[in-house]
Length: 491
Image 1: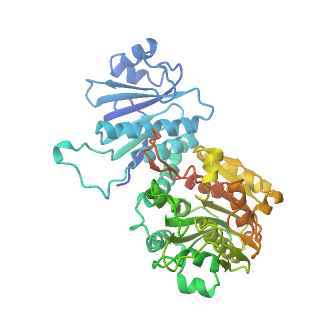
Image 2 (image 1 turned 45 degrees about the vertical axis):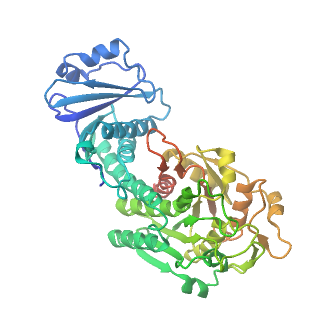
Image 3 (image 1 turned 135 degrees about the vertical axis):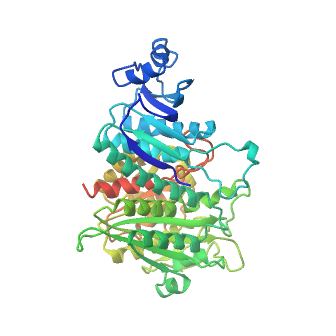
């Protein structure tokens, strides 16, 4: 169930809410805005701040119980000395929503002083992220053990601009929620067919065009690179295209491309058994495209966007592709298969080549592509590589605004020596050295018809530990980067 979010002017003298959250910076005091609230609760807020019981450090929380009618609890959350106040408020609001869930509160209000439109938007995104919980495959606990869940949140804003920010934030938050739900679903439920049906639902709700190619259609397109990954599974692979056409008719679209491996066993080059269950998250790039298209549709952005997804499963079987096999991609290039676990780039190769028919102004692909990116950048930053330096910087800026930081890596020709093949035009793995870079250089061979950027989200698309703001599982990356990039093209 989605969190019901709304905006209202702060009237602390009359506010009736089970939980009020105050987001305060380091060294906060009771000012004219908070005076009515402090008087209502008998001066406890001023005394708490004057005694420095609460100092406003990042993630610091202090829970004050109240005996005042209509004001059961007040939760103070620290912003710290934030350089980016919008991101600090987003983090604080996510923590607040999670804490409200732990308390069993159904309704809450969130206040941050002097909110701009961007800050109100960030709060809405954070509240939805913090309230999100995946329970649909769990049996409910006994009635006496259940807590109420957070159902409604009110953002206290003082301007029409901030109220607009809440509305925009809801659209972005719902895109994140869709991506996280798809990521959390197991591979026996979230299949290529399921992703295709999700795309059809988005298209129906927002008036988009949708095209779905199956195995037979891809064979006619000579997509030997994509299909070799799918030849080990009886499930029908899908190439899914969503078209949002709200810009000028003759304007070139932005292309968003996502890797959609609904489960990746590694194929014949099978992965170790321990931790293999996490490979249901190998479709987070595809989930990011669908989440972004959900948000773009909700916002009705005046721009042309084409979202493309290549989806299948990578399984070992008697018909699976083998190391040493050579396949031909739709652009005519021959590929030697060195490692069947380097399958995402094989799928994306044909999807990127197919994207050229839309004559895009720019293309960004996102994929949980290489473990090498996790070694290089950990779980903090996406790897960012591309053929156009200005476009790379545009994507990096979009990621920064979205709170999804990236770091550029080089695509120097010197690295191409690592993926030269003795029997084909190129091989799909160059080994361990510079693994993230050689994977991107492989993709570059199929993205030469347009400006292109590749996002390696292997370390950021999901988390194996609780991050405080969200539980372990999918993070929603790269929905924010995609959306911010497209919004940037409308300004």
